[in-house]
Image (cartoon, rainbow, N blue to C red):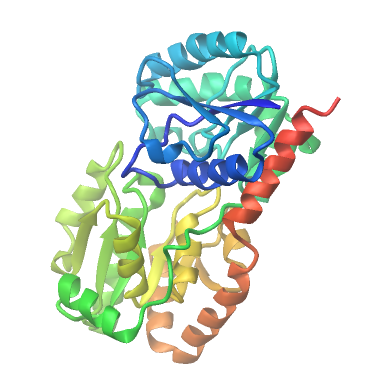
Length: 375
């Protein structure tokens, strides 16, 4: 087969979230299927490390698609032009954006529909683009892949797409995430928290990630326990992050909150692995890779009781109501004071983690691609 894949989010040094999914699955698919030809579409000069095997040909498609107007130009003009020229068997888009007219089968990976549930968390032009075109992309695709049963049902319900057209391809976790030895944990705590234990949040600083309520819950936790525990926030600000800044500025324990910004996978492993627990409580999540990263580091997790997170966490996390500050704070208090629960969650995490791997994800996505071209 001749397969064209949208890989515009593969940018060296910026692999996380959807680009992590793209990197881990497409690399495996290209290497595991040398009998097929793959054309990877980039919107800028690519790094050579993304040419995964000899059966890969890179194609630079102008221009850098990082704005709604350029998204439209790229996916409604440029990519269809490339598809007409290459005449592939299938076009695969791993970031939800796709085409509405194609000379070949189309597999669209739609990770979640957070913008349908929380449109106010996005800039107006971005919100309008998603709400106008993502329903079209979903309905025009030959098949859809998504990362959880929750998202599968959400796409079916909101866009009236038949369930049998949607395949679940769970995310995996990077092999970079491993448990740390005590000496490594000690060094990280010395560096970031003056040797204190800490809760960690890992992910973008986006309003739907619920950082504001996490900060408020941390204040309640500190007040009720008089603990010297700190909070480390690992991630990059996005969109309306001023609301997070406002809550932080007024926080009574802001000296105990440490921001690291974006870090490498290696440093993320250190920061998560040296933490006391992961606190990851978004309002909405299509999957929640940080949950698996914590499991891989042997770290207990507090996460939300809604959308996909109970599905991903299973019996290996303490669930709370993300809209309720006291619920988050109570979970933090409980985990900090109940060592038996702490160890139970760590043990459960080892078993839950066995359900997920990037090898499994790549195989499931490949099955979806094969189904899209079945006659």
